[in-house]
Image 1: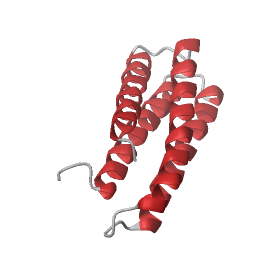
Image 2 (image 1 turned 120 degrees about the horizontal axis):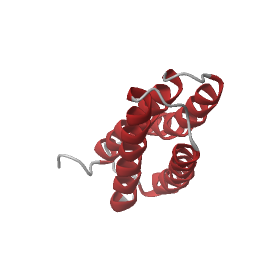
Image 3 (image 1 turned 135 degrees about the vertical axis):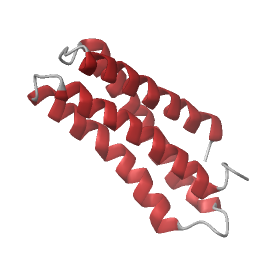
Image 4 (image 1 turned 180 degrees about the vertical axis):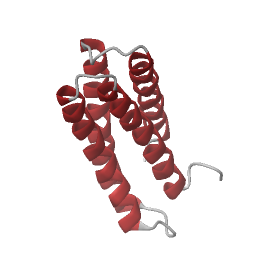
Length: 121
């Protein structure tokens, strides 16, 4: 795993969460900057998936590989589903769902770093 890249994913996930939450609290629908942020987050998560799968060839001895792979794949799946939900839901709940997707991407990435042994060591 590349720690600095993962922390970029965490920060972007939190930025998407914050902006989406702000729009939800103001009762505003999804907008282009929020969609762009979610798309960028998804691209970074896909790159992280590839990095993580390649890094498995030189993994730590105590790595729980099935859990690690599940977090990699789960992090990639959540944002597109949230975007689809947000596009259908025209009320404040669309951005609210997207804010949860940004938070989940950040939390899952921190958990990946923890599994890899880069957090709390």
